[in-house]
Image 1 (spheres, rainbow, N blue to C red):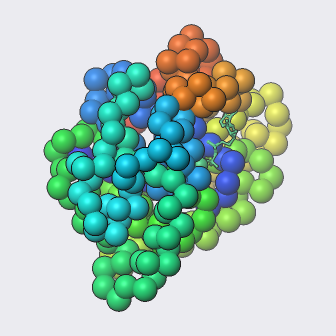
Image 2: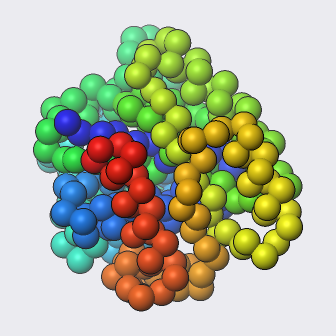
Image 3: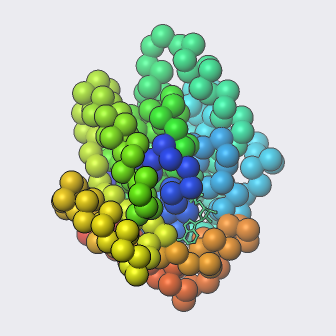
Length: 256
Ligand code: ADP
Ligand code: MG
């Protein structure tokens, strides 16, 4: 069965896209069939996968609006090892168009992805940095949420709004929605604030706090400008290794 995972945090710059791209590549390297969905108008997951967001023939927008089927728009990223449902700035139109609809506006993406069931082991959805209609579509399509965050003073602020949104979607349109994991990114264990925030996260989330942490690593930051996941750009870097360990932890946890 396909596991659909939404990477969500309405805060920008916490490592959603970085995790989505590198986790997709790491799962693919472990022989999992992976689809990465770029649901952010910034199109960073698309660019980071080596695809020019300005030159798309079709995008996830067409799929969300029900104008094209996913299989017509999905691109193969042979170097990265996964398939991509690309996105770009056109997605900003989705917000307005979806809000105009009366029926099933939360379920557009979920419905479109139904036809892919069984084709992939994992579908990773890179959500935009807000709790808008696109994110709601991502959460409605997903089995669970992976929440990347940085262990800083403001990390927990805003998390309750996200958890409320998850609860609301669970109660209304997607009862299966679960918190699959809290991922600490750009992690620096020498920092005492990091340890304090980690303790708070462990107290609150218990087992949902993933054991794997992703260190701050310059190779991770450089990789997107080469259109490659860090696991291909700098295989032996600490950032690359951490993403592989993360993939293994999620494979075990989620039976991927
Ligand atoms: P989001 O998608 O949540 O907005 P990004 O994944 O785009 O966040 O990350 C924000 C910035 O931080 C990017 O410039 C990215 O290259 C950098 N970054 C993310 N993770 C790491 C890391 N582990 N080490 C170094 N830089 C990172
Ligand atoms: Mg992003």
